[in-house]
Image 1 (cartoon, helix red, strand yellow):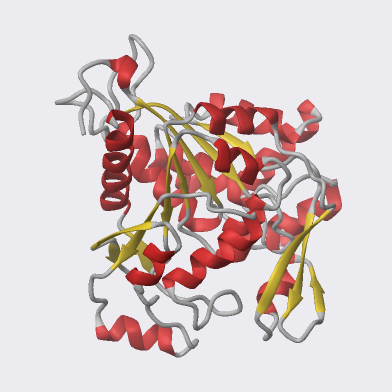
Image 2: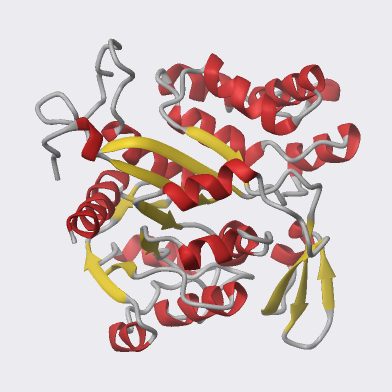
Length: 345
């Protein structure tokens, strides 16, 4: 994957939200070139070969309305900071310390339930008067190895048409509904993206979407006017990282190809070329744990994926701990290898 010159390295854009995006960013940041004259970070993969990523940007969903993020959104009339906070931690130089600090959640009093990182972003938003500027200032303070853009700076909220025709409003209510989602909507429907986010997509060599909750982490970004159009028209190599398991209230019973179909339907077109699909076995004890919530491994129906014009890339992308996560090292290496092949082609 190494490049012979810094100028040939990739411009990478990662789109998503929740823990899925921050997990992927942890893997990608290890391949980011340090600024000229700066020391190579200890966790970098660039010690023995040129870095693969010249520029890394994350486009993050901002439709959460629950927990600390929802409270700050309602009380301070600001965008929800939670997903952005996770990305700041993932891309920071000193992730261990900042993870403990930014993820610290107060237990008592009026601050009970709030995380320090959310309050940090809320304070900077009040100081600057602009959430996007607060995110950029936070990135500078934390020396992140990439830029972070909210998918929109409009105070937008989700609604969903369910399989029985009913309409549920608000992300929290949608994820708690017992009905299946037929269509996800953004209110207002004309919410505009940040120009910088569209520029990053336009200039990218490699774009990733996922992993993450099908509707509330991935599709929500594609409802922002201009983002799916930019993804459809870009010359970048586009890769979807499919989830490991189906998810209650979002994707129970859906195969990998059905995940892709839902994304394409909401984006009104094919917006990626490859799909990373896990085919490695998962421990029986872990499967039993997830089965209690009706969750199962996502079926790798490879021929149906190919019929959609998408090339499946299969492999072992699992990290098993207290909860299932993608192995961010494996995922980062594979998507970057795909990006490099696309650049050469």
